[in-house]
Image (cartoon, rainbow, N blue to C red; front, side, top):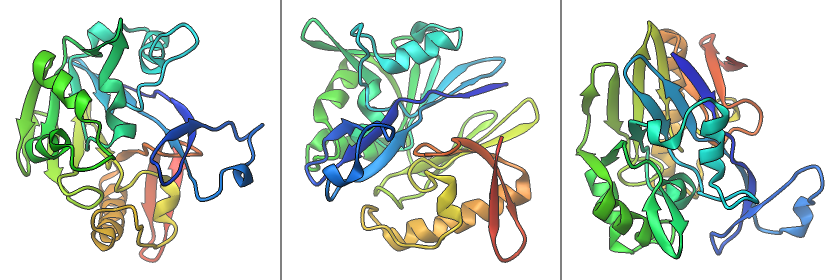
Length: 256
């Protein structure tokens, strides 16, 4: 198994839900009052059978008009067309923007050979256009062009990949437990997006169910520590891949 974070960089996001690139070395947080500051890390896993992407980032392009995500995949030694599975925790724009790429005024799927694993009700809600956190046009393009394996609730997608409807950050959010080559991997999407969130207890206003998300974070942390999971932290500012220890009172998280 090969496991990589495909960093898409740092951004600020304000009440308009617009993501603006933020370079902490030259930009000042005070110039963006009321903003949240996040880092975006899609992940790549190479197994014996698949090349897997976990959540797809914002879909921003570099100066050559190429998706940053695509270039990161090439930098890892693969092509976007090599991706066989895309596992989606949920479909908020900062996780789903990279599912498509704009070319000549039209949206094309970013991973044409891949099967996309998405909670059915999450997709339906995103397609409804009822929330500005979702970009409907992405899902319309997927519907027309992509292979989508809709899942419902909890289950095993294939040997080594298990999903669970967690419903904390969004109403139909899901998390993944995976095992490849004897190594266990946990991806908590936006219910465990940063290692620091295990070190402080809080209820976030941006979650669909803040208390449930807060409780799930502790549950995930304890399970990861007990099972020796490698954890993938999508919005990590420090290290996006780590392992967890728990001494019965507090967590420590170390880079993997």
